[in-house]
Length: 179
Image (cartoon, rainbow, N blue to C red; front, side):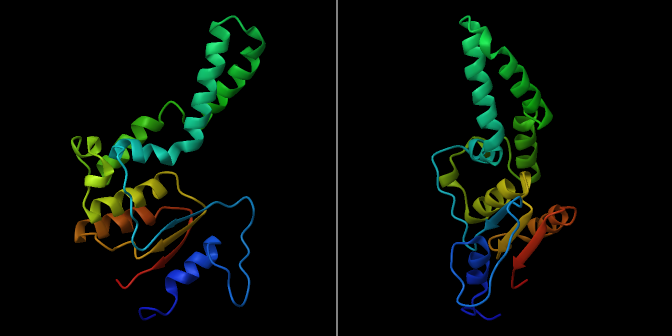
């Protein structure tokens, strides 16, 4: 569709950000949905690495709960040992001990150097911000992935990378693009 035809609006209707004027959108409750907006704007004082870890917010929450339980045990509260053990097993089962190295490795695949991952997000170029935003979505992919002009600010090499990353995903991918 031409500019202004409503392509981005359609994706926002699917996301639930806009109400539709006609029809309905049904998405199963157990399905997760994520979207890369057309002009993904990441502006943060956090480092690129810290921003990427957001993809694992569920794991980090469990990690914090484990830490709190561990402190209680160290202070003599044995009533939480069973909960600690159970949560620790769950943490290990969902990749809790590997998430930091996976995030760092994926940043390398996104084209970020070791120096880049230490930079504040707000110092990145538009293309780097797009890659980071896309990487956060793909690192822990939702069931339904909506991409609104994902190729904006990407060079040819990153276009090929995007195709390679999206191809093996089991997610439903809906893309708006002029490419």
